[in-house]
Length: 82
Image (cartoon, rainbow, N blue to C red; front, side):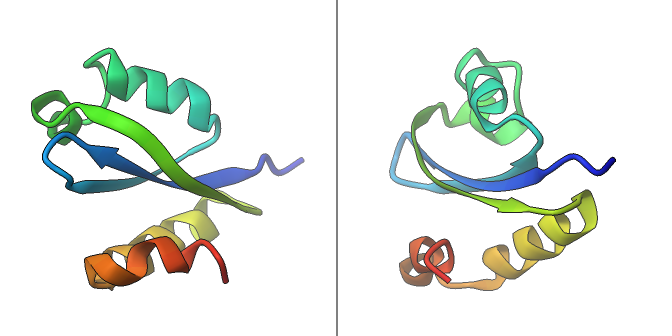
């Protein structure tokens, strides 16, 4: 049984975006908010979860994360509308 993975986008203090993947977006966001998430979000605390999108497996979510990170900031939110 394959468990769904999610690509998510967070807005951090200072207006920066942080993208990642997780099986449980709410728990992962909470980890970022608590300072136990990624090194980047410890230095730039998250303000809000902007978007998330489901993928059938880890590999697909990781590819989507890479694609999202290649986009200019102005197009990142639109990626979730595809």
